[in-house]
Amino acid sequence: MKKYIFVTGGVISGLGKGITAAALGRLLKSRGYKVVSQKLDPYINIDPGTMSPYQHGEVFVTEDGAETDLDLGHYERFIDEDLNKYSNLTTGKVYWNILNKERAGDYLGSTVQVIPHVTDEIKSFVYTVGKTTDADIIITEIGGTTGDIESQPFLEAVRQISIEVGRENCIFIHVTPILYVASSGEYKSKPTQHSVKELRGLGISPDIIVLRTPKMMDDDILDKVSLFCNVKKDCVIQNLDVDQLYEAPVMLEKQHFSEIVCRELNIEARTLEMAGWMQMLDRIHNRIGKVTIALIGKYIKLHDAYLSVAEALRHGGYENGVDVDIKWIESEELEDKNQIDQLLGDVDGILVPGGFGSRGVEGKIAAGTYARTHDIPYLGICLGMQTAVISFARDVLGLSDANSGEFDERSQHRVIDLMPDQVGNIPKGGTMRLGAYPCWVRPDSIMETAYKDSGKSFIRDDEEGRLVIAERHRHRYEFNNDYREAVEKAGMRITGTSPDNRLVEAVEIPSNRFFVAVQYHPEFKSRPNAAHPLFREFVKASKETER
Image 1 (tube, rainbow, N blue to C red):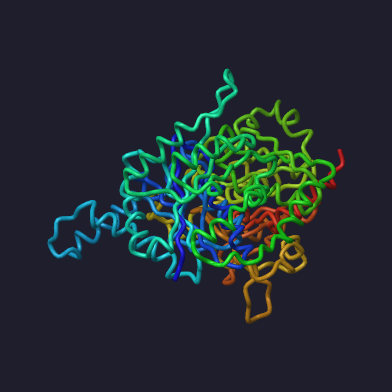
Image 2 (image 1 turned 180 degrees about the vertical axis):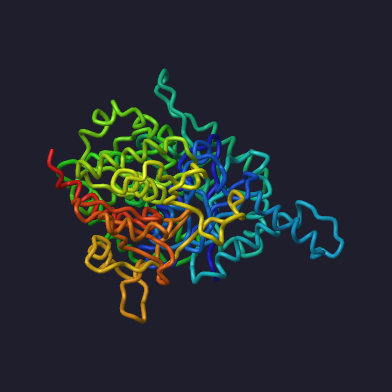
């Protein structure tokens, strides 16, 4: 029988439910269980794909092409398992599915209602993620805050699941803050008590309460929470601030978190094998020196818009034994040529991530030019590859109006453009290339050096004996094949293509120490205990930059 863990949050948002769920997933996996995670989001958007990064942070893309909440990135990085389209469900998707069924007559004339139709749709989704994987344990985070009206159908659905699977196969974990009143020097548990009371009013009694707190509390406050929230004393867990994100599982396990979860789920608390994770933490704690990487985007005010990129850079630092200091730069600032030296003159590497829209694009193009002409290690991702190609076409090929069809349809030299089969079919969110696609890697390239020993998570078998990798995409526009020959003759080497050679996936400039730009998003597959090969090599090259 599969086991289910539901993680809810109370009082305020932003408590770290996702990190709590992800850390627990790592701990249970370290005890030998197969774990899969999912998140239920109460907003009405179908998915975050068309939402502003300022609203929602980055869009995380799964192997099968689902555009999902950024918390799924935390899940994948902690449990090191690829999630799928059943790992993120929104209210919008629920109603989309229901209304399509209603129009198709699937309800046989019944009146469609929140109960049972909405809750049944949610339950089906939760059950499906278990059916489509061989997971022993399904961890489901319910987004939002207990008491929010939009969360109620999700909470009712998981309440019903707990009855259907049996309470012996299901537990509820409730995450709440403990308030500290500085004037009296006291911790206050009343908000937690009220939150639990509200949750109980919905038919759910938490089995474990996780208290978000900056520092360790005395037993008296834990006793109070235990008594008035009706949970066992050792089921009150403190989620403390940690210096490094990946210390969270260790911090929680010092309080026997996963052992308690196993007990409450009626499963064996198998031996905890954390040697690999602890070795990774040792690498983090023993870093020597620092590299400064310029991350150039247009949503810099919200760092979560580039969460996976930032984490992948840090992972690259872990494997190279250095601390990666990210210098966040608004791309529009680089459009002022007088500021470029001031902003980029002290960095060891330059990274231009993905993005959409014309704002700040000229600054990203300028960043590519600066990296190329000053021989500073450069990593371009998605749009960062496209702007690097535009920069090269303008400066080296002499095509002064070179651009992307996304930004200037009147340009005579659209070196980035829609493929012929895409023309006339570009509604927002409708025609992007999403999810994992294969890429042939050209021999004797930085790409080959990076990937050749990267293992099964990247490399796919190829009948012709070529190095073929699989990476996740999220884009619409492509390298214009009409310019392939001219670009290569001028010194930019195409080192990654689709296996049929139709699509350009990666370019390099061999005359530079490290200049690699890829159409896909390598950050989504980076892990703290196994940095993505390109980020590892990029940080390595940046580490060697002489200033």
